Amino acid sequence: MRDKERWIELGKDALIVLLTLSAVWLLSMTPLIQDSGMVDLLAPKESPGVGQTGAGQVAAMLPVRLAVTGEGGRLGIQYDEGALEEQFPPLGALLGDALASAGQPQAMTEAEWQRCLGAEGVYFDFAGDVPLSALERWLQGPGETELTGSARRVLLCAGEGDQVLLCWQEMAGGGFYSCSTALTQALHLEPVASSVTPNGAYFAFENQALTDRLAPYTLVTEGELGGEGYAVSVPLVGEGETLTVLAALDFNSQNPAPVSGGQVYLDGGDRLVVNRGGTVAYRAAQGEKYPVGDALADGVDGARALAEAALGTMCGEARLYLMSAQEADGVLRVRFGYLLDGCAVYLGNEGWAAEFLIFGGYITQFTLRFRSYAANGERALLLPIDKAAAMLPDLTAQRRELVLQYQDSGGETLFPSWVAR
Image 1: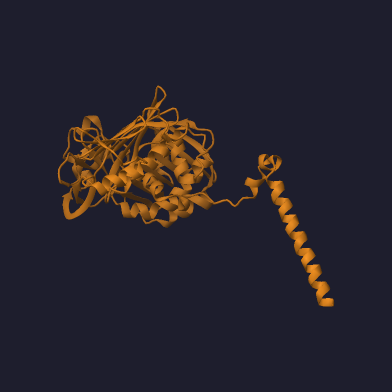
Image 2: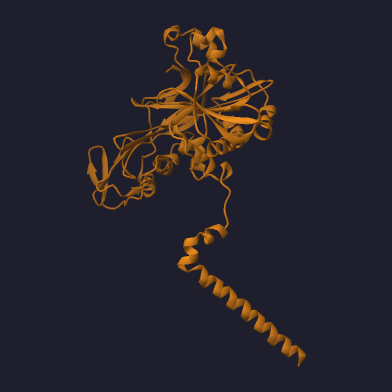
């Protein structure tokens, strides 16, 4: 009898708990609770950062050059994608935190910038003109930085006391800026600087013999370079590849119409032309097929996602990088290029692999140029940069940057060469 009563009491308790949970759930669905933000507050959060970003974002954010300067000297990495992929994640996480906590920017002189480059710090070269808001989004997650403008070269360096400064060179006007961050030297910068093994890397302005020959921020890493050779092909050769691209771009593959050199696919009034030469071009009628948002970072990220979905899976051993994002008359023009082992590929006469036009928060036009690159096992022996500079006297007056670059003019093989730009 006692057991029966105990089971009855347990049943009552269970019923009370069930009714209570039901009441809480019903209360949480009321406008008062929904609008209060309590549901979002109680929801589990993922910690943003480099480790949580997707493969496309990692490809877009990876710099082409890194330099870490400590008391014992400087480690410089370039033209070595494997080493960059190994070293960048923890350094990128620091940069993301710095961008997310950036204070009010202050202009700095070029002499101050050069002193910061020589101090303890971490230097990033992203090759292209990267909006700081987009860079923060890729590295940190939410993209809430209030910094404006774009930069190719970014630096974390020691400031006054225990402070860590975020510095950059503005691409548009070439000016230099710095701001405070929430990072500290003791916790963030010093452990990084003390853990690397210097390899003698330096900037051209730090070497008197190169000061009058090269642009001042040309990174010089000593030693011979072997340039990897690549076989080039156009991946849009069969129906299967075309269907893959159409699916990535959310276009119906039914009933294409022939046009000169290829086929056109329609989605309402929107047109997508697939050229047999490897070029895919889109033009919107209403402009609402590819929404990306109004903010600059939204537009860049939306274009990046579409480029990675279409080109990124078919370019072989290359990867995409952001070349530029420029806004004029309400239209945002975003361009991406190919990189091979940290070297830019200059494609055709214009250089870029993908171009997007964004207006009113929508991608309204784009052109994609498909290429696939595969290492062919051949190598070209290249001179070290200082010796290559000595053989190019035309640099003396112009002080241009000397970089390794692939030129893809439609041939079947590629080898890198030194290019003054």
